[in-house]
Length: 274
Image (cartoon, rainbow, N blue to C red):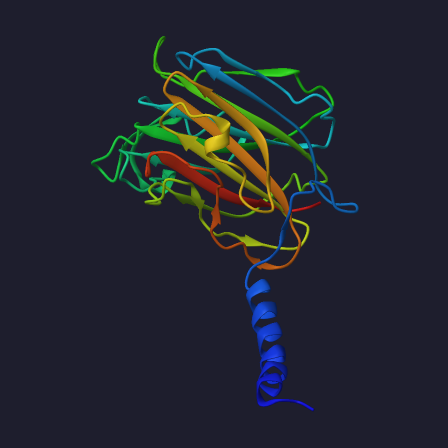
């Protein structure tokens, strides 16, 4: 015989299941696995730190081959950072004026000299912390490494880079969506939401204005750490994972203790499969 309490549980059960399903479907699942049948796979990642950002050399990930997509994340602190590099296509950027500021982007630039923005919105330099995302398809005669000059002068402040290779990505129009965040008011890093489709690769890139250990910023749920570099007074992280359903990703937050809030510059982007 059903008691009133048991009847209540039976009536509540379907409602709870429906609630859980709607919560699960609110944003697409992200898979730590970096390969889906015939889709995008993560080939490998390299990283480098350079004391003055001049003649900074980074190797192409081993195993990358013709037709793969290279995604390069250039970072710099307390100095200028070019928004254009010959042979590469810009995919996103974040230039910060100071810790508590949001990102400035190339459309905000009001004074340009070559590949550098001298002023943003007629007021800001955007040189406290910056990162630029660039893409390139591996060619038949692709070099094994790349050298970058991040400043307009012969010396400068540190620069660092993370280079990842993806197989099965659309190399003609790789970026479906991207977004940035300069101050998340969170000791962890809260990457902004971007639009994604099933089979896309989600990439999350962080510049951090202090040297920090990798354990402080663990990969957000459903992603894995593709790259990490830290030295002197700065750090960079790259996370990635496959999107398993259509829709906005929602905010993706790192795990761990984190560090000082608003000392990060964050970029989220989704890469289309071929």
